[in-house]
Image (tube, rainbow, N blue to C red; front, side, top):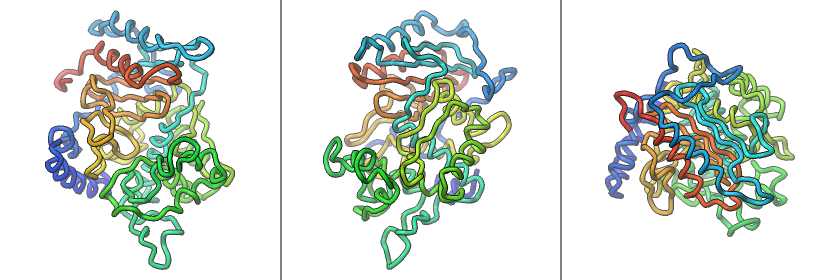
Length: 397
């Protein structure tokens, strides 16, 4: 395990255990805080090729409840939105390294690119992890944001780890300033501030001590994206070269498109596009412990770090730009109430999901809209899919 990740994992395990005891969530957060308590990540099955060029396809195994799987897909496409198009535009299931179920709404297919919304945050996390592996960024070092390092600025203590966990203490939560276009995130994406999102995102003062308060913040992800981009050269071309060379190319994510603001900075909080099969490739990297066809992409221990809740009293379900299926605290939400605790996910607005289930060796991708669907209606087919597959031997459910 990378030394900085090992130090942080130990600290997080201690801190989260204390928080869980204080909050009465020992079962939900205390045990999960220790990476050693997570179920093992399944290895690549023998004889199954890696999907860098094309996904292997297979019929569901005999132990899979095929009727339940088919019913889950029907349920996923039942809600119909505007123009008579199902809210779910793409649904894909990868089991044991092979695509075993795939369906698209009319007008969409496996070549269609789908908007990430906040799943881009997880892509940004992967890019940061690659730089940690390369020794070009350090999780526990002060974040290299020039505006924070002068004249005794109190923000100089904020680290990359604080930013990835959204426990930086910065007063830049999405809902700051109201809702919709008047909110911080609304102004940053659609207002005049959108021209230089990094400058705007990094301009806010501290409202809390780092690690004492969790707040969901697209602005924080924008800062992480800018930190990554400046570490690889700073220009749009530098960032694209890095993305393609270190992540997208090795994984075969040929459909992927990243968006940049007018200042040329990657909009890593919500603007990344890829096909359903390429989103499955991204998730598969995490299901396989950050290794792709024998090549380590993410640092050793990074996926356990990804599955460890951030150490703040008002957090139990958000990790480092991912979500885990644990009992929430406060106004947080449960990732998948009917799903196993092993599940973790990259998630985005309007029901974008790349769901990873190590106990079942599953990647489940749902992409589309929520024009007539509730979150419960989006989640139910995901849970039904998992229930159709048996857990792996000796891992339980």
